[in-house]
Structures are given as C-alpha cells and as structure tokens.
Length: 298
Image (cartoon, rainbow, N blue to C red; front, side, top):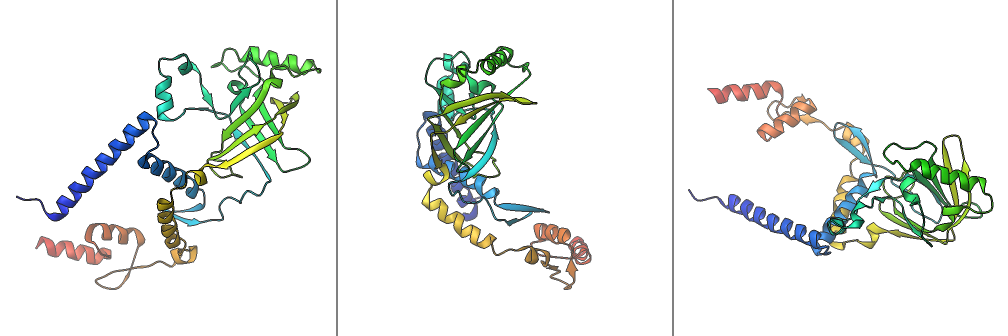
C-alpha cells in the first residue's frame, strides 16, 4: 500500500527536522555560531523574556501585562550568586584539563594581582545601584558561618575579619578590578542583560547581623542587552505577528467565551466542550455526545 500525500509530507518534514537538529548539534559541539545556533539562541532569549510579560490567570490562560520598565539610566537590583556552566563547546574543551576543576559563578571577577582567595567562590549574593545618589555602587555579600560543602570557607571568613580589623587597607578586596554578570529572573531588569562594572574601589567591609558586606564604588559600567545584540529579524517578525493576535484577548473576552452545542444549541461546559472538540472535531453537550455514541454502536 502506497503512503498518502499527507504521509509523504509528514515524512519529508521529519527528515528535514532531523537534518536541522544534526546541524545544530554539530555546530554547538564545534562552538560555531551557524544560522541554526543563532536562531535557537534568539528564540530561547525571546521566549524567556516574553514569558515575564504575561500574568497567569489559571486554567491555562495568561494575559499580557505591563512587562519590565525600560532602562533609563537608573536601576537597583540584587541577584543570588550561583554556580553556572558555560556553553557546550567551552565545557567540553575544559574536560580533562586543570580548568575543568574550576567552578564558574554568576559573577565573574577580574583581579589586578594574584589573590589567595577567589571572592566569587564565597559570595552568596550581590546588589548594584546605578544612577541613584552621588555614586554608583556594588555590594558583595558573604556568609558569617562556614559552609560544609566548602571546607575553606572558615579560612575565608577569618580573612574577612582581618580586613575589618585592619582599617588601613581592605586586603584581598582591594584586588578586585572588574566584576561582570548577566541578569536572569531579576524583577527590576530584563533577562540576559550583560553588566561589566569597571574601575572598582573598595570603600569598606562591614559585619552585619547575618552576613559580611563589601561595598565597592563603581567608576564606570557597560550595560548591553544580549537579546537586542543577537536579534534575528526574521524570527522577530514572527514573534511580533503572533503577539498582535494574543493582545486582542482581554480578561473580559476570556470570561465571556461560550461554547454552544453544534447539535441542540445549548451552552456547554468549557471542559466538556474542549474534550468534545478533541474527540469529535466539534462542540457537543453531554446528551448529544451520548446520543452520537449510541447511534454509532447501532
């Protein structure tokens, strides 16, 4: 028996999709930014960012909200400092090398000299303030109690205490030259915005009730929206066209949505209507659906 045209079309799509996936996998393993890689990167960035612009109402329904306020030179926010991994190519290159033993974190720190401790390893969170007051600043926060998964945390805490006692200098904290990071799941800022904080000057290290805090004055900074940087115009047009359709829906329209039985004309419960469409290709009430099943059996 020969396959139908629809079957051949489906098979062709499947083969094409398989080839595209193979190209994408090979490019990622080689560290090449091909069209497939660029499309996937921008798609992930865009979907992640757009998802933050919607408010979930329940029952699988979401509506467009206000979204993130546009950056106008003033912003304050904080982020946790967590372990992260690089891209696939970089991580594979690190395997079986001394660099593979080095853990990467949300914040990346460049030092102006050799340091005994990598501060990013012990930092639990950080805050930045830009455009407020007379100066821009960065706060790095550290635990007061040793962490069992990091045996040398106690030694680092002792180092912080020495820096606090010696008011003439800030020890290892004065070695911090540049701090960079990329935002993700920050309430006040968009996802995937790169920040590079430069010409940092450590003003003090203090002990609060729950943590140690190091304050840095920021000399200058570079902010770059990675979604805009890696924009793919073709995909962006598709997203815009789809969004125009989504924006037509409002809470009132959703709440007024009704399902009418195609057979008897009565109003049908949403869940029954959706199940009927899935099974029969049309909306039927319970009674008409049952009658249809009974007649089919005869």
